[in-house]
Image (cartoon, rainbow, N blue to C red):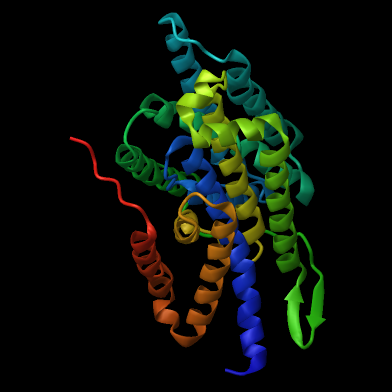
Length: 342
C-alpha cells in the first residue's frame, strides 16, 4: 500500500462513514425517545433508493400501495381507540394518514415527475410518513413494554419489510443517476461530485438536527421525552406525538441515505440491512445516547471497512461487526452496575 491507495481508501471510508453516521443518528434518536432499537431502519434506505429507481423507469412504486394500506389501517385503529374513549390527536393523524398519502398519490399518479429533484422530493414525501404509521401500528401499543420485547417486535418488522421489499422491487438491483456529474482531481486523487454531495448533505442534516434539538420547541420536547418520559408527560408534552416525530425523522434520514448511495452502488431489496447494522455498530460506540460519539463511531466504522477491504476483503464485514466486542467490554468496565431489586 502506498500513499495514494491509502488516500483513496480514506476517501471511501469518509463517504461510507457519512452514510453510517446518518443511520447512527436515526437509531440514537429513536432509541432515546421511544426505547426502540429500530432494526428496520436500513429497510427505508432500500425503499428510498428503489422507489426513486422505479419512478425513473416510469413505473409506479409498490411503496405507494404500502403507504396507502398502512394509512387505512392506522385510521381504523384510531377510530376504534376514539370510540373506546381514548384521546386521539386528530391533526397529527390526518397529516400522517390523509394529507401526506394523498399528496404522494397526486405526485406519483398525477404529476409523474421527470426531473431528478422532483423525483427525490416525491420519494421523501412518500417514504417519510411510513415511520409514524409503523410506530402507531406496532410500537405505540407496546410503549410500556420492556426493551427486549420492543427489540423482538423490531426484528419481526425487519423480516416483514424485507419480504415486502422483495415483493415490490424484485431480486434485481437498481442504480440511479448521480446528483452531480462533476469530477475533481485533488492531489492526484479522483473525487466524484456525488461523493461531495453525500458529505454536503450529511453535514447539512447534522447542522439542521443540531438546530432542531437546540432551538425549536418540538426538538426540546423530544429531548425532554428522551430524558424523562413520565416527567415530560406531566409537563404537558404529548409523548405519543414525540414517538411520531422521532420515527418520521428516522424514516426521512433513511430515505435521504438511500437517495445518496443509489448513484454510488447497486441497491437491492435487502441492501439496507447491512447498512443499518453498521450504523448500529456506530451507535453502540456512542452508547446509544450520544450523537457526537455516534458520528465519531460512524467515521471509525467507515475507515475500518475501507482499509479492511484492502487487507482482508473477505473478512471486512466480520472485522466491522467485531468492533462491537471491545466497545462493549470497555463500557462494561466503565459503567456503574445497579442490582435489580427483588
